[in-house]
Amino acid sequence: MKITTTEFQQNVGHYQDAAQLEPVAITRDGRTQAVLVSAAFFELMMKGRVARGVEDLDATTLKAIADSSVPAEYAELDRLLDGWQP
Figure (cartoon, rainbow, N blue to C red):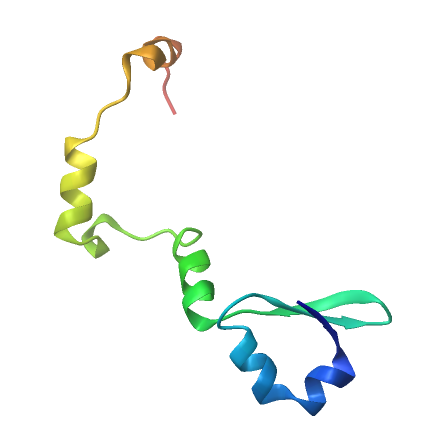
């Protein structure tokens, strides 16, 4: 959904509700200046972009990491790291 700044200012509550279903692009002079999204969507997007310490991970996530493996088709990538040091 795309609306003007004026429309947003006149109907803030309506567009806050609309943002629960889809992002609301707010334009000024024909260009998108901001995008209103739900708090849930914002949190989801930010979680993937914020580094957290291992101590902050829950047990389910830690187990998933511990149980994971790299598919054999990518074994060549391990060989690229042989002898690498930071």
